[in-house]
Image (cartoon, rainbow, N blue to C red):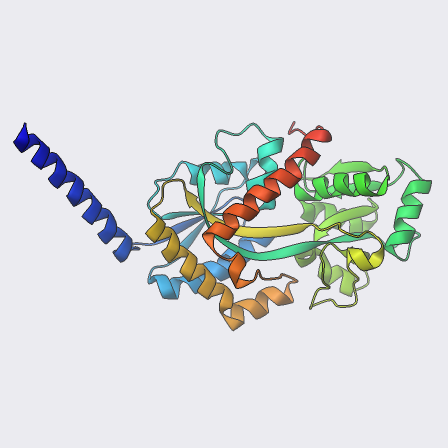
Length: 325
């Protein structure tokens, strides 16, 4: 019996030493970053820039794996089922890691099945319309929508996506009513807005800014507390007459639940260093993205923020009875 206890203690000690050594030497091989959307999507663009810059401090490449489908749920599920060893990172945003939990019946928990790593760059939305809409500012747009209930149309990137939820939130806050037209992605909705087939769209600045600058569509406000450095002429929602209508399409990194804290810290340090790189910051700033402050870039801060976003958006989604078809 005594000998058996000694053997068990030795085995446990060896396991602890092995885990500690593993964390210290991590990573020993390339890391996979699972992107839950198609290549070229805004979150994919952010991921590629950050992943390439994380390669230096980690000493290993990060390979992006695009697993799209079910509004990002397939990719997030793939990451949730991966080994908790740090070699699989889940890249996602407010849609994939918050909204989907209320819209879809998932085989994983967006909060409980992941360890937070780092909050990355965020992209506010623009409230935009086709040029033919007879409103020159946000106050005028709201007045026009109220005068024409259920007549205007707003494109969405799909049922339950951020563009859809933003539209529902807008209706709730302004007392307006309009029809939603779902597309297989906001890029398709944006093309129809440019073509005049729909009236409105709530889209990420990174996607719409080029067309706003070219005068092909009209931007009424940015859904943030401050103006975009890359488009300072567009007022904030506070300035335009819809105070507090803040919507940020934030991006972040997670790893599967149970990943050792030392490995999480290593990945966090690499991500923070990547976001501090002047080239990365300039590139993302040019696309209209903002960066969180250093105190918001810790794993603990992301955990608190993630939970707060779930508590903010899930009741809005459930009250509107938004469910995936």
